[in-house]
Length: 241
Image (cartoon, rainbow, N blue to C red; front, top):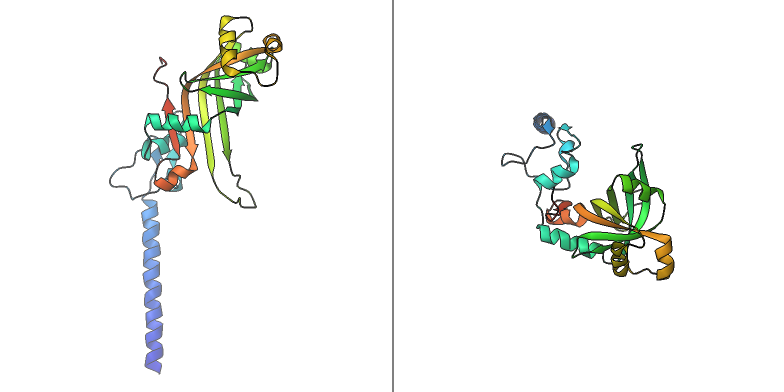
């Protein structure tokens, strides 16, 4: 009986020592994940990782304004073709869709607005109508660059959503203000088609915005299930940089 108890104790001790060894080994491996720059790329020596894992979970990453977390995903995981990304954008913006739009005034203070835009897929532009004299129009007349995003998805909170998903398209564009009475305004208005305001009233009340899309960054959480980057990028090669 004493021998049996002794064997049990020795076995338990051996298991404990082996567990400690593996824990120490894991800690040692973790410490090997040293600091990296945000331009780092996965290589053949890196352990396999899924797109659900970010570099900053294992490494200290030095980010900057140009090389950011989004681009680390884009640079290191599978991407769809440029045409496939554009097709997804067109399907995500089938009708008139609401965007949050950021513009910047002369004081360098940003203004966020909600604007309903319509995508013209063949022209790679977005159109909207806006009240004359609004803050965003005055800002865009001086600084035509804007950043805008349309999104849909679940919100994480204390109560878990029924379905977890997130889709968005973030656009960097250059806006042109089309003033009422000009040929450009009339042509754009014919494509936009006012919904509630009679055409003649709209011509007195509105200016239009035409946004040339320079770059679009797509996020689709479903991509990760196929081992693709959740972020995808589309750039307009028809615009001279």
